[in-house]
Image (tube, rainbow, N blue to C red; front, side):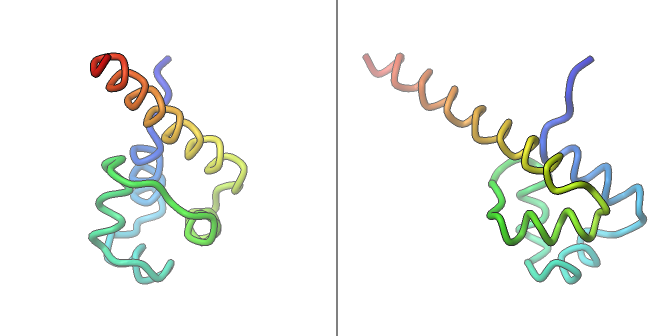
Length: 87
C-alpha cells in the first residue's frame, strides 16, 4: 500500500472533518494560499503550525511529524539527484 504524502494526508483529514481551506487557514492562523501549498506538497510546515494543524485536525502530533519527515526526506533525495546530474 502506498502511503499518502503529507499534503494528501492533511487535505483528506481536513475534508473528513468538514473544513474548507479557508476555514482551516483561519483556525490555525495562516493564509489559504499557504494551506494550498501545504496540501500540494510545495512547502514544509514549521513546528508551531504543525502543532496547530494537529490540534485542529485531531491528529496525534507525532503522526504529523512522521509525515513531515517524509517530506524533507523527499527533498533531500531530489537535491542528491540534482547533485548527481551536475557532476
